[in-house]
Length: 168
Image (cartoon, rainbow, N blue to C red; front, side, top):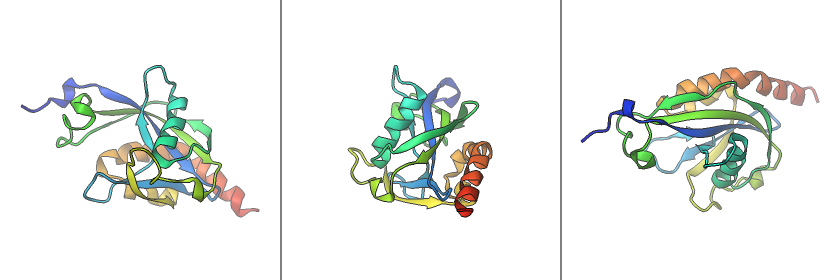
């Protein structure tokens, strides 16, 4: 029996556009996919948790550090649907996709603080800092629309960081 995606809700989630002092954005490669599947940190919001609290917790759980500060929050929640082959399989089959509140966060640590291998349940096996212009092309197709919207919304922040850093 197949699950009708339209009958399922979206999973409440946060996403983090984490950028460094050079205006580069953190992406990591998922450990559980056969093809290259890069993404920014993201994850579910626990009961009683604010989206901002969830963002810091997700950073700690996924990349081993929460050395960051919130610079901006997305104006609205953004949704994406899972591909048909994943509906009914991930998140115990309870969701059709995710509705996400995104945060632009400035990384306040050093690269040595990022420890994707030191977390309890690793989700990633590689990471890198990428240009805002290269970000969307690295992302799995079913999440690209959300990433394009996030890049559009937060681009001015990244550009201002790059400009400030280049003028020093």
